[in-house]
Image 1 (cartoon, rainbow, N blue to C red):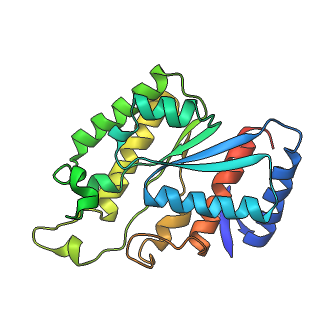
Image 2: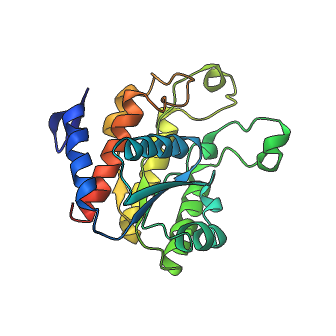
Amino acid sequence: RLFSDSHKMVNMELKEDEIKSRVHLMKNADASKYCFVGSSHARILYWASEAYLKKWNATNIIVDYIDAKFPRHVNDELIKRNIIESNCTKSIISVGQWAAAHVPRNRKFMNLIGISPIRFPHYFLEVLNMMRSLKALNATGVHFRSIHQNTLGDVNFDCPPTDWRTPPVLDRFTDIIHNLSDVYNFPFIDTDFIAGPMWDSNHDLMHHATDGKVTKTEALFIIERLLVEDGY
């Protein structure tokens, strides 16, 4: 029920009412489109944000989801087609889970087998190239988000492990994204103070529930952050 806002503890229901009021202040402004870029974690935040906007009857903000499993997938084609030409006024990018994951050996993921996990230097280069492409194409409103931690399970404790999505590995990926965001002047949205303390409460060892308190609080925080940037 509570979450931190500038080191203050705020009641979640009161905070939702406040953010709803800010959203409705935008009714005479140009429409905004918030695009969540990533894989399943981004998709869950998209669903949670969409649920809030529908609940508030907000018509001046829409949300969208753009699938990208690895930093290399945020390439020139995706940036042009899905971010720029799709008129994303704000893009929230987080691509790190798959880079440390065990890729399932089934037909759906055949094109990804053998390319995960990515070692830290390689991940650094992929993120670097992604950000350079965003800058070269003059993509505006781009933000990067911290990567969620996963609950530990048998695949992490195998010897050798078959999945490398442990908190230290994912935190290092977040460090790489954060540091390069500073270099290229992309805003960084750090939601670790919300999701981090609950890292071992994922219902399926990987994801927080769409309608759970962690996801809903994180979605509220991101919406508020984007509103504040626009002066609301």
